[in-house]
Image (cartoon, rainbow, N blue to C red; front, top):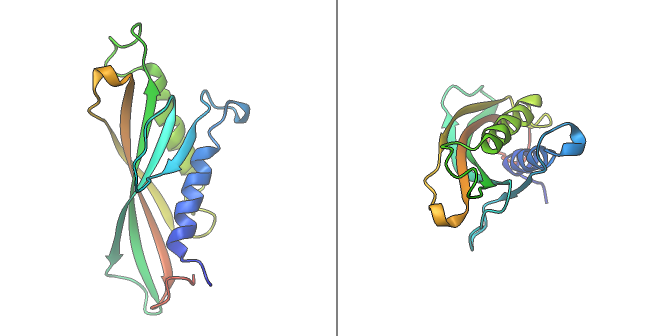
Length: 153
């Protein structure tokens, strides 16, 4: 069975996020995961990829269907009593910057997309007692499929 182009785009995003490693020249070792039906719990320097769905692009070429896939990337870092007084822990700001960098390195998502746009990031409301801080980053991936065939480019 053929794999939907959207699944290939999502897999590429997760692979790119999982390449944030100190051994690769980054400041963080991050573990990325997709949203689970039964929920996810943030761990130190974890990244959660949430698929918010697609919108059809009205000006698609005649023999193709274009979509904008919307994602939210949630970044979490553990905070201790020492750094809990800072509104945005430097480790969190660094992690978001590294996520943005990784996603912009291959904006074609391994040739499955036309463009990747990393949008604004914003703080997430977190419970002080939870022991972590988080920021979310909006990501849009413009991809194209063959007309009426979501499995073909």
